[in-house]
Amino acid sequence: MRTFKSIFAMTMAIAISCGSTVQAQTKNNNNMNPVIVYFTHSGNTELAAKQVAETTGAKMIRLLPEQPYSSEDVNWVNKQSRCTQEHLDQTLRPAIKSIDVDFATVDTVFVGFPIWWHEEPAVIRTFLDNYGEQLKDEVIYPFCTSYESPMSEADATLEREYPSLNIRKGLRLPAKSEEIKNWIKQ
Image (tube, rainbow, N blue to C red; front, side, top):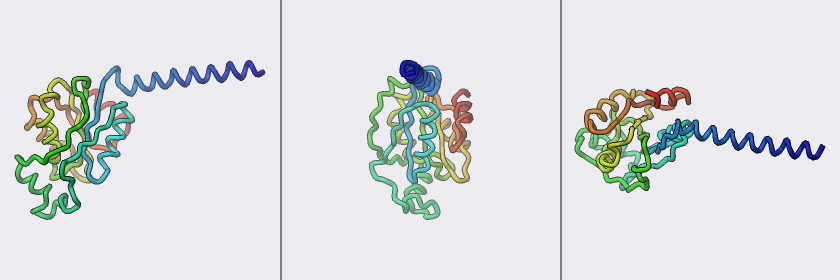
């Protein structure tokens, strides 16, 4: 009986190990080497990035502005707030901290952000400006979080401002795992 239990335990351990390997390969969508670069202010976009990471197996990298945004900075009803000024003057680019990723080893970049003024925040434009040359050979999947705004307006501004990048149609999160998988297959 002891031998049977030992053999059963070893068989289960091997099955679990093989299952984990298959699951990891599935998450990486047939050898896709993805990374998630995201900006979050309230934490909602970080939750969305985690959802993408769970589906794809991608490493998450938080994009940080040199000068963090305060609650007043994102008060969109205040015409003098930082986010409003960055919306009104599309040339503004807040400085960001450098990120530790070798884009030469990556083929897919998920870029996450909250929608501010129906578009991506200026921090995302800074990221794309700073790293755009390194991203030219990558497939970029933008995703957003928003209470009301659709992703379509951010899709339009990203396509217009970064025509040399391979930016796919974005997705508003949260979404079901199957929706995320279908979005990536587009």
